[in-house]
Length: 218
Ligand SMILES: Nc1ncnc2c1ncn2[C@@H]1O[C@H](COP(=O)(O)OP(=O)(O)OP(=O)(O)O)[C@@H](O)[C@H]1O
Ligand SMILES: [Mg+2]
Image 1: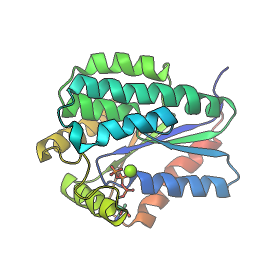
Image 2 (image 1 turned 45 degrees about the vertical axis):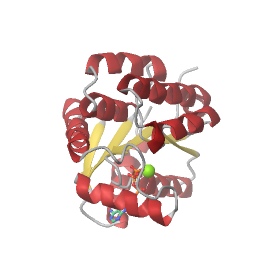
Image 3 (image 1 turned 90 degrees about the vertical axis):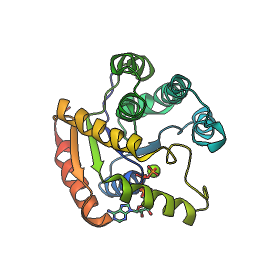
């Protein structure tokens, strides 16, 4: 079946506000009477959540970059098949907290794996699905990591930040630059939002980007 709902992804470095903005956007869309599904990467499905534990556990710091790539893609393939495609086909709007661009930014630009190979495996995992709109929250990595670590301490998820947050600053800098490069290459799909204001300010910008887009004819 052809998809009919809109597919929106939110991307950005650690702590840039993705999860916060996904939740606020979902609330806004529901208030507009739109049926919304929010999911996160890696995870969102039972198998995906188990894969998430492997990926984020600091005890797996010897995971090879290719093993890491395949785990992310396995989680994505399951999420696309189980949640994203069926939801879009039934006309729902799907908001995804990270998607294919994250793999290119982290495993490609961050870890240095071949960008074309990643695009090919991404294509397999997503069955060729592309977001209709991607919002890239752009924040300097120092502020982002400090927000992410503080946030997790508050919620007792992890005392010292997860495995990926523990990567060196150069890694995160490459990820941020990688995201910007992706936005340069696909300006019609990826909109860069500098995270310079409060959560509410950014939410207003996100809504202004999404609202007109939703009334466009499919
Ligand atoms: N614009 C903002 N100004 C100040 N604080 C913010 C802003 N956006 C988010 N925060 C705070 O930063 C912390 C991290 O936000 P959030 O968890 O949404 O980021 P994230 O991008 O999902 O992080 P991660 O990459 O770790 O999943 C939270 O405590 C959130 O309240
Ligand atoms: Mg998050």
